[in-house]
Image (cartoon, rainbow, N blue to C red; front, side):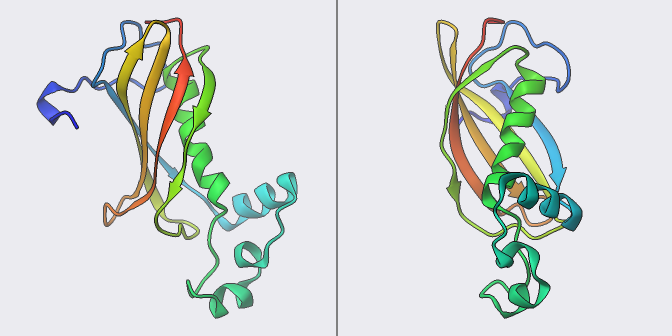
Length: 146
């Protein structure tokens, strides 16, 4: 991993031409109970571990957890708003810890490798308060703004 001194911070929401290895972008995300319910309805994942308060209390987690794929969507948001007109080629997601409703999470995306118009990105989602990683993975995108 590159040290902070060699990183250049990209700006969310604007085009970022001239992307280089080591560039980083961060953002915050939080999922409310309402957002989890809307996601469940949209994709049809009505697992009570996400929706039913009693099931959540009785679970190994002690409360409801946010859908893993909903938390993973934070990467898509940041990538789309940083690398305009990019196209996802792949994304891995390694789930390390549960995410609870209304937790503030920090999304960090770092450029690991560039080959032509293809970027390999390290993707990390962590709890803002403790810094614990909840998801770590890698995205590969096609981006013509290099």
